[in-house]
Length: 395
Ligand code: ACO
Image 1: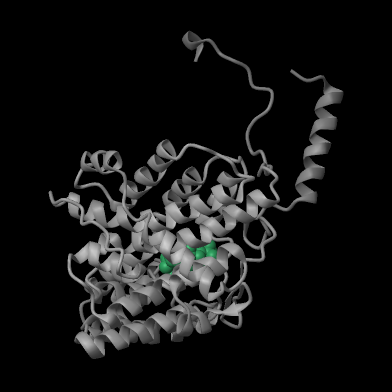
Image 2 (image 1 turned 60 degrees about the vertical axis):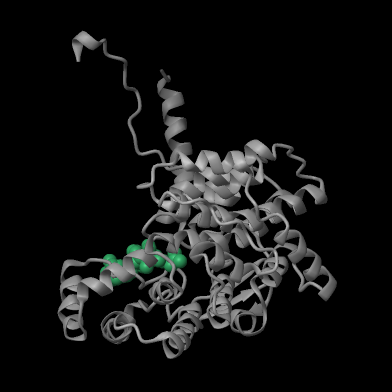
């Protein structure tokens, strides 16, 4: 209960606060942190990791080298990258007890839910939390980068009643994942395409899952909890989950002739078209261009995908009709076609995105704890004041 004077002064204060900090739905355009990890110019279609254009990294780097760059802030020397790769290749196995735990996951469960639970379980086994110790940070990075792919591949086999395939230390990161998934050694082009797609998905400034990772990191909890919270955020259809829905949509359209009526119907109903639009890019996402050329390389070597012609027509129609509003393909539009050609099951598309994005989340975790202040934003209260409790028999 407030006195009249208190009430007036409180309401003046609330009004002053809401004028001082304008509320923006979805925090659009509001900086949530300072960061030197990646940079986007959404009008020019530029994406840089630590200042290096994504096109150069996709052309010349590897996922492991890019991960090192993102987390430690510089391109590693040959000795540094070799040591990092060696450590990762020797931490790929997942503990027997975690595998046993995963065997009890329902086989109908979504692999993102399985991944979120198993990532969180790592915290039970590697509980020491020494966030000021560079060795602890390094070992947590190595474990997460090494084990997340093994968990994704293991759940995929276990849900079909099979044992997980043991990782192969002699295969590089991307080839080993495809091997654990398909139980056969991948073609070198397939392995390279997968490695490049990991580079493209590794980091993307302050998106929803990265924000989630930073908020969790700011409480100084362990890095496994940070990654588990980010995985949960990535799972939604407006974020990482869109790539699965793109293929569903292409199949539903069914033919090039059906594209125009599909687009017209979506526009009339104001329905979102999956794989298009982005909060930051107002031109075609630069990663979509690279993924499109990777898809074409795969089609040339392993055979065409009939849905590619539908995708091209859809891109043409949307660009004509919604381009003036800044709506063009985002990364998810072509990633599904690439993943399907690599033999990756559809419900693993988002977990595969997570395998890559762990690199970015860990870079943000390290940056956040390096100069930490706990996240504690405010809100614009829209509820009532001066209400009173009513006994249940009087309501
Ligand atoms: N199809 C049709 N219209 C669209 C689309 C789309 N995919 N995306 C945005 N628009 C339109 C909206 O209807 C809205 O129009 P209006 O101003 O006339 O009402 C305008 O563009 C702005 O859209 P918002 O939803 O306000 O944009 P926001 O920045 O909030 O959303 C998002 C961005 C979530 C990516 C959105 O474009 C979308 O839902 N796209 C489809 C899902 C998708 O592909 N997600 C993957 C994103 S990339 C990633 O996470 C890796």
